[in-house]
Length: 282
Image (cartoon, rainbow, N blue to C red; front, side):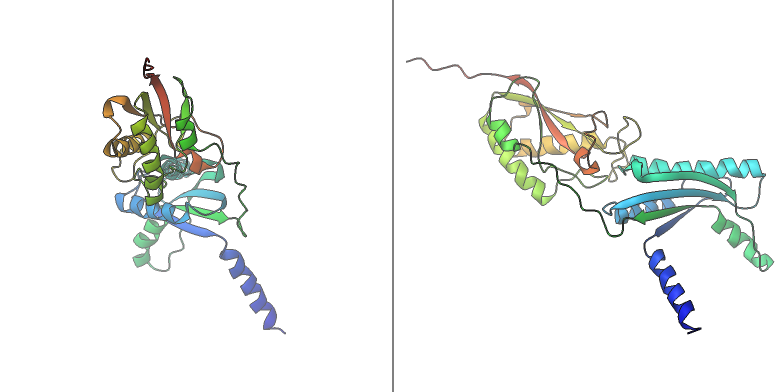
């Protein structure tokens, strides 16, 4: 029985530990800019967790033992803030980030002098702790809106805005999935026929700070909403929609929908002009 209790306690701890996911980002001495290799590791980590049902994320910054207490506290906070900025720039839902704190220095526990440089390097870091929901929550699906095809076939007027249903994008990217292309094929077929519709393709992004655009992970430019709009514009043009009837624009994060983050990674069509065909005379 004496051996059973420690085993049960250890199993309980491991069960709890499995719920948390941790990632460390390491920094150079006196720096809070993220090294390129560390940023690549961080983006890979984001791609691994972005589809999880996350309860909360904590971001903690640390320093090594050099520097004054006040200096280390400021630097560790700057490192934590730099990591949060990467989350924001890459369309990550900030509402689940509950802590962004600088903790100052980590006290050294040096076994011998040869360990000093290595330990200090490991202490210049930010630790990210992800707490998923366990079990994941059941998502409530919103009621299905009228289909994009039906809206485009109906009566339209200048100023109408139509969200392209099921044209959603992977976090941080602007390329079309196979499923999105199939939907766009149907939309293009309608627009090719309705030659009197002039419109602007509007791209949107999710979860950035304020109204900023997100960074396109492929090009590293902060113009992801524009890239999404142009992707749809180019595809419609390729399918036969005349370019003179279309424009494209990036709306950054000026018009969030307030629901699931995925819904803000969207493209909409704004009707700018309707030219009615003259009625034939008998």
